[in-house]
Length: 191
Image (cartoon, rainbow, N blue to C red; front, side):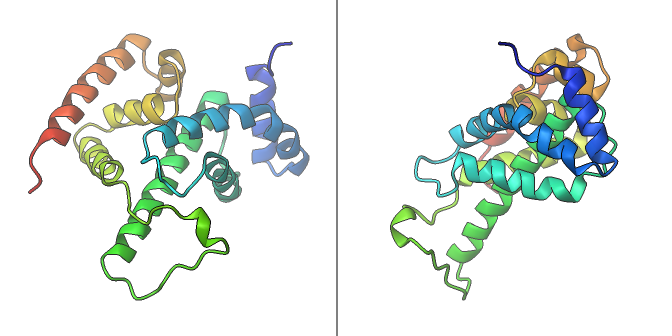
């Protein structure tokens, strides 16, 4: 049995964007697997002791999507691009909040199940990558978007080209240049 068609997902997204709550109920099971895979890719780049789980990341994306639902959804690739950006933002916010507590924040985090928390340390390389991507975005926004969509969102070259409205060759070229730039940027000594 094949998955839902891109056209079906696009129709549901557009209906949801216009306020049809039933469209969201129909859409959720159709895109959940893809969102879970994207979240899994994000989490694969986290420390093994990261306290945020893949399913919790997907759930947080759904919560935040409520705030952006009136967006004029273009298609499935556009939806996945927005979700990739939300996942990145959630993980960065999570890492920064952990770092703030580490730097002497007065509030003490209390968990309902203290045994679930293995580590309070933020993943420093995620913050460095976010800073580098923001820097790249200031220099060349499209290359930064290509990295976000391909690396974090898991979009194919063709899907990335569709979202950014450029050719697949442009995406490949931007992807190669952005990766080289990020490797160089992330290998520099900290200031």
